[in-house]
Length: 493
Image 1 (cartoon, rainbow, N blue to C red):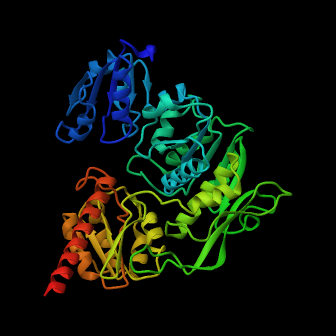
Image 2: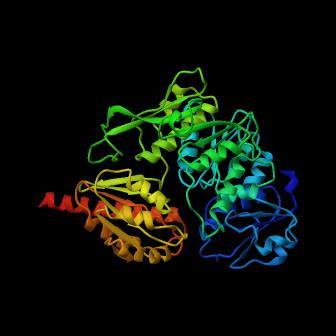
Image 3: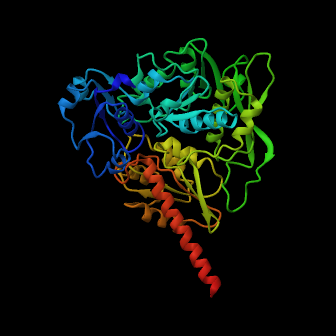
């Protein structure tokens, strides 16, 4: 990239995964004079700094300095940095890792956004493309910056990008984002500690189809009012996905996919494998022309649990169909889709108890969806830092749980009085994952499900939700080993 050779470039917000690290690496290798500045200190950011070891990068940590912005030819803004930051007012030019990628990428694009489900949808689309012999690439908010694979883009190599509201907001008005297929997952109240209102939050989501035209596709959720609003606004052709027949949720001329009950019964009932939402499994069908036949897109038995996950997979199937893949290829690929770490991820089973990591459930609606994914008694580990979410529906749902284990945090402090009013018993709050896992194990009996599905953000006790999920998995696996060793000792005796 000769354009950047010798230029002064400031990376605002290094972070611990994703865009900051990739941006620093990209511009340093392009011959730029790179400064990385972050309000967090060197100790906190040491894993990221280690990844950049050996590159000629200047670090300004624990603070920002105005001259690093005023003298820079280009400032690369981390999505989590507020757009009204006073430091950005001194910048001559502001970009993000996503905008730089879009300026130079040679690949056709599928873009996915929403409040929850977007990582599963994006990953499932990539999986379908890959399984159908396409050299597809996956990045964005899923913690892989597309700058890491910019040199691999090609007209024959599709790129799937998961995009957060912050990433989309940074692209507003640039005209850079024009996906061949745009997918919008469930829209739920989120990040209201960052946005002034729900309308402001959703406004950033709308950027995903801002530059689409009649040659593009927008895939909308037929079961939400937001999906119908998006369909009215986009200039692209609209496809739908729904939990019920499209003629009921949209109209008889609607095209896209829907879920329906299958007569197939689950055969995933062994003690070691994942549990599934119901014995009455769902499969996904689609129709993509008014005179076309119904097509089976999503098989009744998939590897990820939950009705909401089956709907996410259906959205991916509709997007893949819009991209031109065959229904047979889509269905075959989705049957082997393994899911995404930290999204109802099956950790293992011990004593007849199955453990799941759903750490990316950072809002109560996501936790409710996780609870509804199982028919067995549930011991839930929840709580954390506050995102100004409404906990009332969660408290009602918690009445039917076998046990609630709380992690400490500002969100938990606001949740506890609501649980008390609803007469929901709980253990904790605990100040370590070790204590929470031990408490959950004591409450669980054979046949139960233990889920980490916090309904809150992770900051305070953990660096991010992925670190929280990793801590849960480590503690659960240590517990499994302890029981296995006890069993082995008993057998020897």
